[in-house]
Length: 465
Image (tube, rainbow, N blue to C red; front, side, top):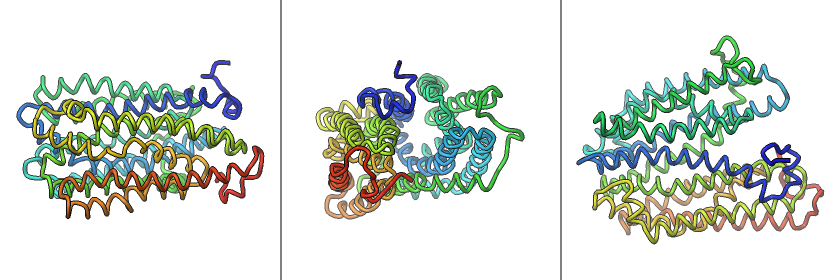
């Protein structure tokens, strides 16, 4: 039997390596494509004649605001995807259709409210997020268009996830790849040929998402699909909405924490390094996120395999999938570490030709990722506990790195080391997170070692919920 058509029971019998390849590759492609989607904008914007350095700094200022917008999207989308997966498994197609309609209605309402409030106070928000008089014109031009297309963005990502959850991951992946390729084509046309500058990058982004959303809605409107839009199109069932939002609150909080961290980092870099330091962080973040997104793709492959085998009480396979995934993710983050330490100038020069910004960015990349080789272990550990239903440990690992370790370091280290202290905060918080992850993983492995396959897992103090 071809692996592509593997039945769920093969999660408990097929070789772990083959399963990881089958489940992780689509996730890696989709996550890498999403990361490249963001990198393309930064690369072209950084090469706008005469203003590229300030433009890329202005783009970096918008990151916290876009993170907050994404957090609102996950609040609706993640819960809806979970509910739809369960309902389709129960063959409850009518209620699944109501959830789909709820996604449409909630995203439209939340997006419009977020856009209206943010546009009304856009300049004060951008200044608060680290903008200066030099960078705010670029941040404002870019963010105005992105906010006007916010409804499209939320619906595109929401429906893309639902299509994946409804059993068509290939279509979801192809739509993501389409937006990446089309954005790479339209960006230089809008930015340089039509001379729209940073506004051209934003227009290209919204246009590509509009085309992908149009196809998604057409696909979800087909009556021959077991999941399709009901009539009337816009419905809001408060019982379903409460369930959906309750499930999505966890990812929303973690994304909101990322927004908070990005905000404080921008403020500290603006204080101790100026506009170029913020631009440097934007470049460094794009490079680092490319490798982090590959790890997230591996995590997507880990989830169904670890969860199934833990539920089936096959603890030896649970340990095997963790170890294999951890090896691959550490390999990925080690490559990022080597790039950061050996060729930082070459890596950052993809985004800018400004010698001063290259110097800032190369320095930041080298310091920020000095402990990045083992970050893959920390990433897979947090996801592993989530797969086993140990959500508290998963959230603990995520939030400790960002809120308990990183934020205090970002505020205290610059007192003595100025701008370099901001960059130093990352490897220190990474090292602490890796240490705690190792302690928790060793503890869970010791408990697994006391169990034989088939034994009751209640002695672990947690079960799948």
